[in-house]
Length: 142
Image (cartoon, rainbow, N blue to C red; front, side, top):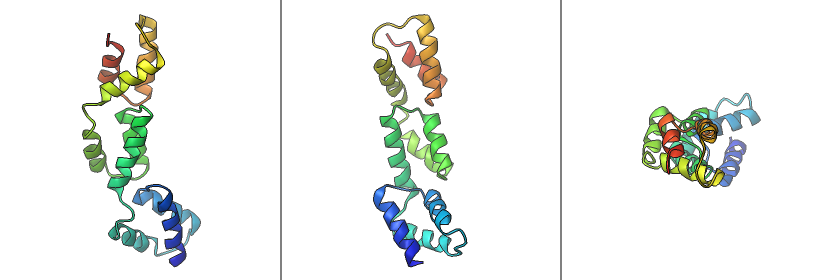
């Protein structure tokens, strides 16, 4: 148990982890260990691991990469974060998505965009996780 705890401390010293993700890492190293759940509960109670802190950190890093809400939501789900927490965290940025898409577009192409390029950049924005409306607003800005 103390070896698992030390391993968890090392991981948490490097970056934030979701409870699910940390559990996966520990289970990978000790596949048959029965008390991993107890360790995770203790780490949560000590406030050393928190899905809320992890989600905030994850969202900030993805915003810097100019990723949209759908892609961020999928990434958080894959890390075991609950949908209610994801929605609450993403709602804090609800007024910034179109601006973020526009910033990404300006970095890709400065100046007026012809119709064929608009189609290409629209697809790329949607692939980056932005909604139809956010991508259309960004592409159609003057």
